[in-house]
Length: 97
Image 1 (cartoon, rainbow, N blue to C red):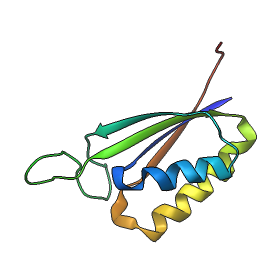
Image 2 (cartoon, one colour):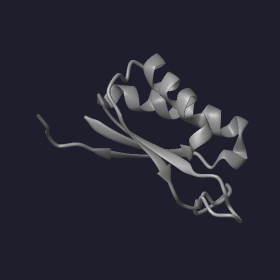
Image 3 (cartoon, one colour):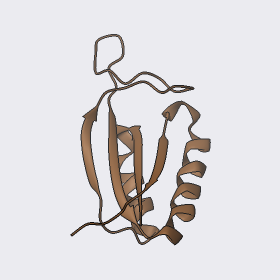
């Protein structure tokens, strides 16, 4: 199993969830109003007067064979909107209940 952590502009929550559903990734946990700044591109998301936008984050745990499909869909979405600052990270999950 793999965990995929996705950070994105909060305006795109519905699109990210839709992508997960189309990739047969049913379960996820999301966080609203996440603040941060990307290490490469994208605008800061601080929720402040100067930088009013906020980010969101989703974590989903998926079977190994689903990872490539999810990342490809996210990559395509990010390429369409380079200022979005979408990022996704994957790591191995050992066990759970």
